[in-house]
Length: 471
Image (tube, rainbow, N blue to C red; front, top):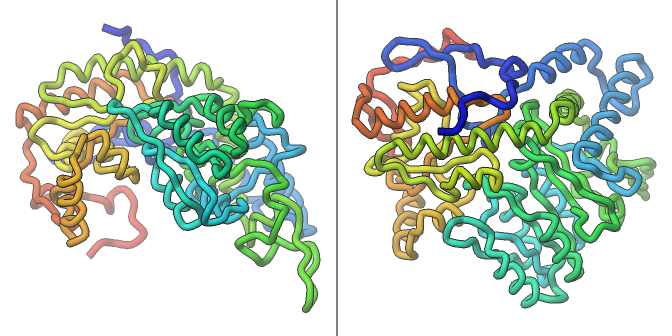
């Protein structure tokens, strides 16, 4: 058995870990959050910084009052800190803040000079946010995944050669939000550049777990673009970032136009501002940018190597302990010795139990938050489940008719830097109970959503937080 001691204790630096939640049987237990791949709780450092900043919050870049001057400096510093977090040379690259990673990727899809004949080479492993934005701008080619879920790099090489001269961009996830597999982004960058293409690394899932380094602009393995998500790196205040070469954003007008994007406007002319201003239309989310910067600075201070070591230990421990659950099927990597090849995401199913029902029981009776379904990565999940074409068509037709009750999927447990082996033990104990049928809820299926909810259970949400009373 792998040793029980955590290598990194971040629990005191996370907001809300001491909060108890109600269970179906009337008890209350400390919540175990194993849904970090979706969103992470805030760092105490972030919450304190936001609380300290809020009294001085004001408009940025144009106000002359003290609060505006302070907010402007803080907002500009946030750009610099995020650039430092990913190793960007800010003399040639820019940091652009937006709502989230999805918006960041959509922005790049609009700003890159693509034509319908341009090829964007992506993978079967991508989150929809790194697939759908490219489909209406270029010819998208999906590199296959291997049966175990890893990237088929031979197919990557073949597609790069097949579309030689046409590939404008290679865009890949830094780490899969489904399987956790870490992509060889720098090796792929070298190959992309040799083929005359640029590369985007979507590091929303990678950056909270491993160091991201864009490398020098002239390095063959340089990452041309990187995207980040604040709410996945312990700063859930509504911000994402796109980092990339300044000159890409200066060749034409921005897709969003309005306040803050210009230097001069007359009735006949518009002179656009430089970057990042022209790309951050309207009043920006200054609080969110400050929060994201504090999270990035905290992670750098803790050390991403320490975060990675702790997580590898936890993944290995979880993979070993999950073997004790009868009838469990783990997708992707199952060998604890190879925990270093992935971030803390473990997808699984329990034989004979719907993934929706498993997740519901874990939540209502175990106080454990997980996610179930396809995780905004339908093609990849279908591939991992090894569904044939006929099964896929049946599922699609049923879903389009408004019935998700048979929707294929998995349960996903995902770790943050603060999770520990006790959290894994809680998960394994509850899964063992589920396999024994040792749960008390009478769960009703909502066919429209696919979700299960216990009958005759009043969830006391009003005792915790609501904006208004429920009817």
